[in-house]
Length: 272
Ligand SMILES: NC(=O)c1ccc[n+]([C@@H]2O[C@H](COP(=O)([O-])OP(=O)(O)OC[C@H]3O[C@@H](n4cnc5c(N)ncnc54)[C@H](O)[C@@H]3O)[C@@H](O)[C@H]2O)c1
Image 1: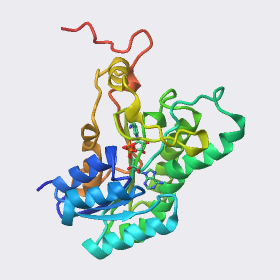
Image 2: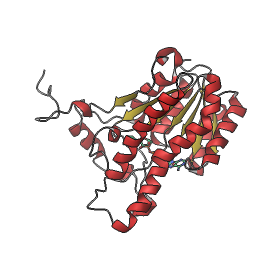
Image 3: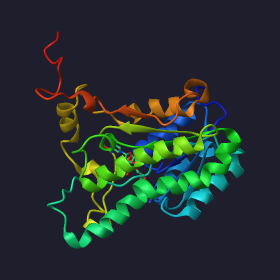
C-alpha cells in the first residue's frame, strides 16, 4: 500500500500513454480509479487489466454530460471522490502558422481547444461538488508546451498556456476547499493523436521514429522518459498528507527544458 490508500481518483484519457501509466500507479499506491476514455477498445482493456480497482466509462471529455457520468459512476462504485486528473489531450504535430491551411485554422482551433482546455473546465465543474465534500484536488496534465515555444505549433502551445491560466484561476476560486495543480511533462512515446480538421487524426506520436534521440539531444538531463517516469508528481499532488499546502502550482517534469541555456544544451556536459 502507499501514498493514496483509500483514495478515489478520476483520470481522463486513462486508456493509453500517460493516463494508463497513472491508472496503474494510482492503484499501486492503494487508490481506486474512475476513467473517462473515448476509445471503447482501450476501455475494455483497462477493465480487463485492473478489474475491481477501476470503473471505466466510455465517453468524450468535451461533453459535460460524459464528465458528469464518470463522476456519478465512480462515486456510486467507490463511495467518494478525492482527485480529478484532467489528462486527455490531442496534438497539432508541430504545424506552424505558415504551414496552416487558412481554411482549416478555425476548425482545428475549436477541435484542439475543446479537448485540451474546454474539457478541463467541464471536468472541474462536474467533479466540484464531490471534491468540495472530500476537500479534494484537481490535477491537470500540462506539457513543456505550457511554458516554452517549439514543443508544438501555435495551437498546442496556446492550449497548454491557457491550461496554466485555468489552473491558476481555479486554484484562486476554489481555495480553501479544493486544491488545483498541474504537472508539465516533457516528451514521451505514446499514442498522442492529431486532429481531423488538419487530416492528422490517424497520426500518432508513436509513429515518430527518432523521438527518443530527439529528447536525449534536447534535454539537459539527456533523458527519454517513458510515461511511468512522469507519474511521481501526480501522486505527490494527489496526496493530501504530502502536498496539503500546495495549490496553483505546476510541476515541471521535462528533463530540464527551463535550464537548456543559450550556448549549449547542458552546462555540465564536460563534467566527469
Ligand atoms: N506524449 C507526449 O510527448 C506528451 C508530452 C507532454 C504532455 N502530454 C500530454 O499528456 C496527456 C496524455 O497524452 P498521451 O501522450 O498519453 O496520449 P495518448 O493518446 O496515448 O493518451 C490519451 C488518451 O486520451 C484519450 N482521448 C483523447 N481525446 C479524448 C476525448 N475527447 N475524450 C475522451 N478521451 C480522449 C485517447 O483515446 C487516449 O487513450 C495529454 O494532455 C498530452 O497533451 C503528452
